[in-house]
Image (cartoon, rainbow over the protein chains, first blue to last red):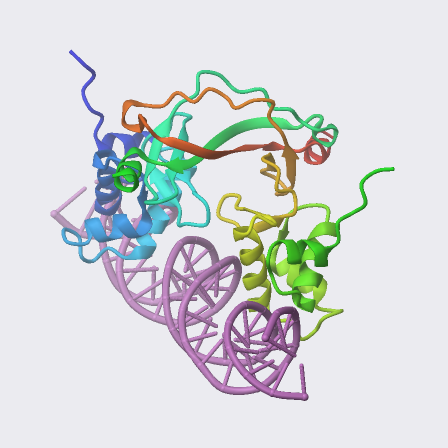
Length: 143
Length: 143
DNA sequence: TCCTTGTTGATAATTATTATTAACTTGATT
DNA sequence: AATCAAGTTAATAATAATTATCAACAAGGA
């Protein structure tokens, strides 16, 4: 059998956070969501079932989650931050037409050709953003 | 002898832009500046010698330059856009302590492991952002 | 010099985000 | 179950970065 899905309450407790309905709902949303949600998307999605939740709470919550490593915050270009439940190191394809974001992985760290002034730079992490046209948008323009 | 420096007026004309004092000053600033300037930095730098120039003009101008390929707009995390006269494909080291930005190059395009849903994605460009601690900041903390 | 068209600068508007803080929960303790 | 300290929430204001608007102005060709 495959591992049973970890529920949001469990995750919150493991992270040392108090379990509040707001946190549960937001974390659950991110666990269910296929993609990379913005604060606005989260807010609008949970609003129908949780009308009292404020935007500040969404910000507080996701920023908090990100700092604790529960989610990954990603920024693409100058757009709003997006939050991803996939915390494994990964990279992104960005469609320049429609803004679609697709995850991808890299087998090994590429060779970075560092200049002299970067000698001794201690690499912690790296992220590759690949820009181009996604299959759907290519289909549209190619006909 | 090495190639003579192309001047800003020439560049503007080649780009098909009208030559205005504002554009000259901003382009010249970017050509002289060692680094990646924000709009605010450009504005504050040119202000003493060109007090009538407005922030909107700086935005208009650099965005325009970027669209025409005269400069490269780069965004790091959620910070403000930066504008770089170096339009050759290159990548960046970002110091998580002080925010320093160092250019680097890559010999060849790394192998991207694209998932099935990205089949047919047409890659136009890619940018690698490497996060870590720069030599200067390492020196400070290591003593 | 004239005139068309692109550009500028001032201002307002917008978007994303952080700060502030009083009222309210959570969860540990009794 | 009641108490309470400490963390959390929601509303609001504040800030930062950027875009929109548009009348006055300047560039460069006729």
